[in-house]
Image (cartoon, rainbow, N blue to C red; front, side):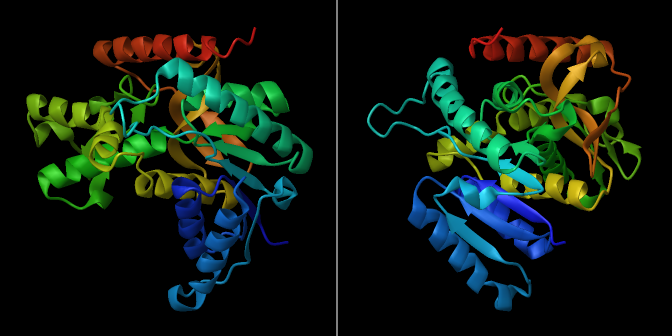
Length: 314
């Protein structure tokens, strides 16, 4: 039977993810959006690109959530993105953003529970760790079937900036970014190499710190330049996650996962290295971290806890 992937939210991230997935021919695609024309038109436009791009896939769109029925994977990107107010020039506050997106995610989770009860859910909506908690609270799905796509995006940014700095192929850059998604993310220099060569053999510690700072503020850099959230890199990272699951590749991809004692944390969704396969999260990998990395991960974890607390769940 052909795989079915549902995109819950057909905005920039959802539609671009559908584009990457179609090119990979990972299955049929169903786009849902509360704005019917957006879902239908983007699905139609993408379907018409198949002959030119050379992919075969059935792509449909609707504002009826039943379109996600029996999906193997549901990618949720619905919600309010980081967007600058054109009048004030300000961004929505953390409390405001989380409360708006909590309502959206609760509704999405109810629909997923009803129409795709056996699916693996990949959350893209921010604040991502908190939104994963919403999915767990509402659906009651097993921990391994709820994954936040954040570390994959942060890691691809980190690798891209290193490749740009050194003038090497991105294929030769290996590295990981863990922790919360945002300013408190934790790139791991001790686990960063260029074809096996430790990164600090090729770049100064000061310059690497500058790259790490740019990575941590990578999303904000795009928002400041564009006026709204990035979507190409986020969509590509999401497609990478979907592919590892549907093809049972068992790739090690930093992802927002539910902890049960790993790294000393319990009952918290946070970004950690994870093996992703057909069951979803198949294993969380515990790495040896140096003192500085441990301290940064602890700070990041506490930041995530503060945001999750705003949900009001017990």
